[in-house]
Image (tube, rainbow, N blue to C red; front, side, top):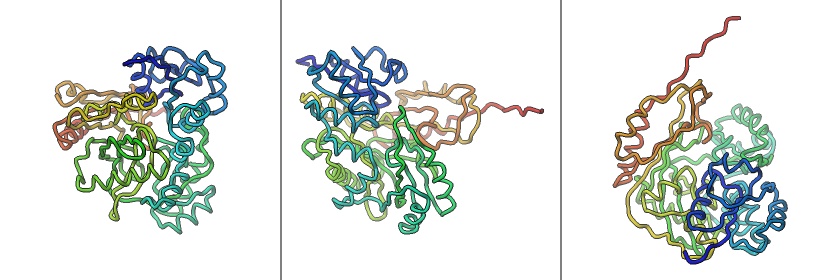
Length: 418
């Protein structure tokens, strides 16, 4: 690396921790803009930053003023969003500071699903029929117009939080009663009181991992997804590159690129979710960032030797990207979930993981005594295993075979007799 730069990240968390790690390991000066001094420990990036700036990361002006009043005013070489929820705010502050990044309007569309759907419709990108609603009566009218089954979802949440498959008016009423009480999400970001009723798109689901330059993809690959049984949409298995529907790969990628152009993302990484329906590829949503769920941090690295976080930091610093595929293998991640609600005791079968040459990593976040539920969102998953293979089918089969060999055990609950 030629020159040490000063790189600021807004609230590294989840996938965003990989950004901080890459910049730190490249030798740059890493500044984290955080809402609390406890967050490096909370989100797992202790030791990979040089300084902290405290701001209300839910407020653009607070972020901007915190930078102006810091020792790093006029010294930042890059300002990078490291959490979804603050991506549009970060984009706006970067524009005010004259730093490169995703255009604010594009970041705003990718954060707000209604604005994104409008952009797809205006640009002729195949998507789902939709209506924005606030009340049950509006939702009922929209569902009748679109036709059941429909999907009800927040306009600005993530991780499949409060996403419902709705088959009739009764289910819609119950779901509306729940979703209107969903006021704040991660890091206390407010959930808008406007929701989407969308056409349910049938068919297999994929994501496209992209890096675009001047609107054209310079890196792309398709990830196959397996999601939980309906009525929920929790992602259980990702395999990269896809082992299925290879003949539709170009159509899936081209649809994703069209969606990025509609939203206005012309440079940098993105993670675009697509359904391959009976009438062709249709957009579920666009995320103007590297894919989470270990897709970018693990699967891309294992399959192709590509570090999309490193390429993104290089993009923001206007350095050579270095995003070429170094080898061609495959990787898969499978998530362990509870098959019923209960009190967790242990996962049987973990001892065999060490015997599998294909297993490169595993991680579990659940402890004995924790209350667990059937997975309704990504937060309800218990842990994961990552496998590799010479082919996508091998990586996927190994992951699913191991997943099926594990058994979640529950504590017997004693009934209190009063």
